[in-house]
Each structure stands twice: as structure tokens, then as C-alpha cells.
Length: 138
Length: 113
Image (cartoon, rainbow over all chains, first blue to last red; front, side, top):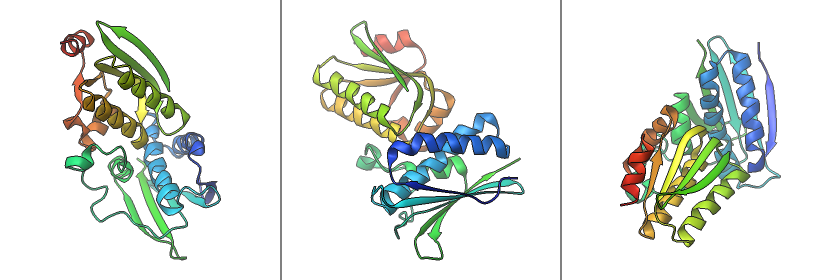
């Protein structure tokens, strides 16, 4: 059983693909279907990229911490950053309209929520932003 | 991600394969779009038939390329988006701005008009 895995990574987007591959392997080990592991990894990495950008301002010295645990019937990723940001209440629930639709940014939470179906934002015990993403295991 | 380009019937065909996600490869794709805009090569057909996945950064580059080409009076259409990529277009509502085709001949006929 996968328990207590903790990753601390710099806010550097050149590391994203490496972490994505790691998340895919975690998913396969946890029992996520092979055709779904890329969706899982994309969802997790959208959350991680937001933590790097919005929480840590893209500062490579600021770390994003990912806690990975498998529980009965679910794979859980907790992503902590160094900021206190939160998505707008509607961000990630509905696609953008009008001019925002053709923005080149701002779709990460929307994609993560739709792929994972369970993504919540809150604060960790230190008062910093924490995202919790849960992937059901069948 | 791998990028191949060719001109067919006067249309610039860009074929992508692999994962269109954050990273250095996306800069190359941006450059390809920018070259298409700068060289006034006309309309662009983007073949996604061999794209395994795309993230929000990849989508952002597609939207940016589409916007730049449209601003210059050109068109960009999508060919053979896989089921997963098509779902992404629906989730993000980009399906409302992208022209999509599943037949290359039909796409080329439309774009060379």
C-alpha cells in the first residue's frame, strides 16, 4: 500500500514532465486503469502548476509539497504551496465566456476538476493554500 | 512532443504527436505558429491524431496560435482530435471557436477556399 509519500519540488516548470511521469507510475501502482493514468497525472500537474505560479510566484526557491496516500478506494494527492491564494469561487466550475474564452491562460483548475471530479481548495495548518485531489479507485 | 510540417494544397499542415504539455517543446510549437503568422503562409491545419494528451499550457498555445492567425485573416482548423482531446475542447468550451475535421481531404478543401 502506498502511504506517506512526500515530494518537495522547486517552483520550476522544467520539472513538470518528470513529476508527471512519476505521478503516472504512482497511479499504475495504486491500481488506476492504464487508460486513465495520463488523465490523473494531467489533473495533478494542473494543480501543481497553479501552486508554482499562484502560490509561489514562480520562485524556484519556494517549494511545492505533494503528499501522496492511498486509502481504501481512493488515491489522494495533497498539494501545498507557500501562498494564501484561492481560486475564484466560480473558477474551475464553468468554462470562460466571451473574451476570456480565448485567453491563453486560466484553464488549469477547470481541467483538473473535470478530470479528477474531486478537487477542493483550502488552507493547511500553517494557513497556506492547500489543494486536495482525490481519484477514486475501483 | 514531435512536430512535423508540410504544405499541402497551399495549406500549412502541422502534425503533432506525443504529449502537448508544459515544457520546452511548447516553445517550439509557439515558434511554428509565429512563423506561420509572420510568413503569411495562409491557413493552417493542425493534425492532433497522434496526440496522447494535452494540458492547459498546450491548449493555451493552440488558442494563442488560433488568435494570431485569425487576426491576420487566416484560419486554423483541427484535424482528428482524439476522444480525450475532444473532451478537453468541450470542457473548456474551446469547441465553440475551433473548426474541427475528421477527414483530411475535406479539411484541405475547406481551408484552400
